[in-house]
Image 1 (cartoon, protein in one colour):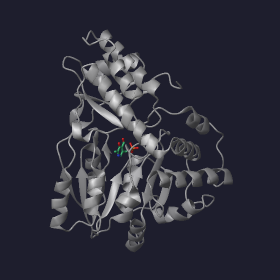
Image 2 (cartoon, helix red, strand yellow):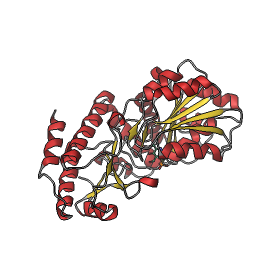
Image 3 (cartoon, rainbow, N blue to C red):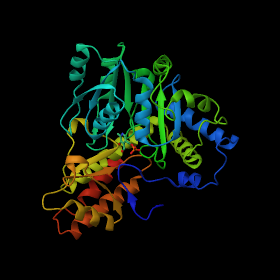
Image 4 (cartoon, protein in one colour):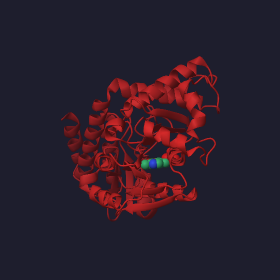
Length: 381
Ligand SMILES: Cc1ncc(COP(=O)(O)O)c(C=O)c1O
């Protein structure tokens, strides 16, 4: 293992040795042919990852929140009404972001741990008036995977453009941009790609590009995709200096995705998630997220009664595993374990073994080896 501690926080996910190698290459010029070649490959592989032929891909220095902002400011105009389908923290962030630009937006919400049922979206769309709909694919605070395909089916044939936040999903969970009719997929490198953080990543459909062009001016300079478009077509052109090493590392991560194959990668994420959930259940843990909308990329887990969040996570860290605490009102009540990117079966078993040692250290009763055994059978199935 390349790390002293196994990072299972939901991003950054553990970094593959090949990506570390590429990150450590000498920094080259941001307009050099060496970088341009890698950049073009990364953009092509990104488009393949979200199954689009005609979409335009954009990658520049930033983060997932800048990806959200880029998606919003480039297709939402002053006369648009936006509906945000929110399953938790990051849907709420999208609403806050839209309001900070003065965009007219409503939230379609549900209880944390639940996904908004497609029928509610259908009813709201039937009322009319929305020209943009945004949804989070996997909400990293709640562990909810939204029924995106069904949302897309409801939106297909309507005027409204569909923005999907794939920060905790793209490259780990299926997202078929062209077939399903998604207009913008925004994401980040540090989760299912398993690359280091530091980039904003978006793919815009033809419809979304047309909308950007019709808007003429947008409330952005750096995040204006029309300023980046010539650079994405020819990365030897200059608009703003790239995060050269991050882009090379991202390119390598997309190579790993392509080599594994998308179907195999999605299946592995599903298998890993199942193994972790069975392992956790074997050790007596219960999930915060409802069964019907569990994400394959991370799990949100109740802190067992009698255990204190900080002490529990510190003890787990002592055993070599870093997990994250709950966000907003779930802080202190849950912990969050990422299982996305290039996580190996050995790392999954290590995490569960370390969890057993943690429980033992904290004098919590559990059935010995139940976690590792359950996960092992799921990983081998
Ligand atoms: C679903 C989702 N959207 C957006 C973001 C924001 O990304 P960043 O922290 O890179 O700004 C995150 C971060 O965890 C996320 O999980």
